[in-house]
Amino acid sequence: MQSEDKIQTDCYVWFHNNYPELRGLLCYNLNNSRNVIEGTKNKAMGLQRGRSDLVLYWQGRAYHIEMKTPIGEQSKEQIEWQRKVEEQGFEYHIGRSLSEFQKIILTILKK
Image 1 (cartoon, helix red, strand yellow):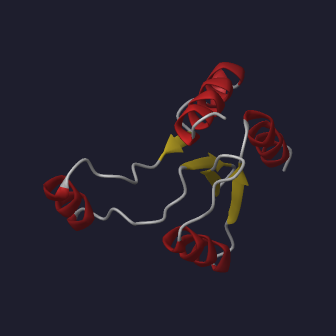
Image 2 (spheres, helix red, strand yellow):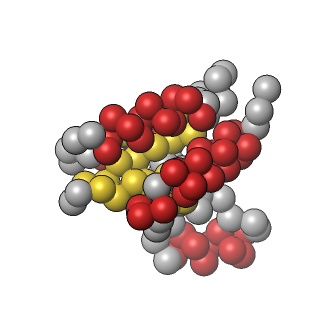
């Protein structure tokens, strides 16, 4: 089974190659710090635990996309983040493979 990192990389590369005109609108959220010092600094600068892995900015909206393996589960913080953004009217998606990610992107871009 592919790792979550590999799935996310494949998805990003597919998007980058298939939508060159949209490059820069699909962004990775740095969610993990390398050490305690970096973590403290990142938290002071506004890093939020549980944020989705990716955000697509499209036509005045932000679409949050969490990448997981086929058996991966959301953490408590990720579930809470999903609740918060959905309460604000944003869409939140979970992609577990390149094909699921492609379907999510195609659905969003048709709006």
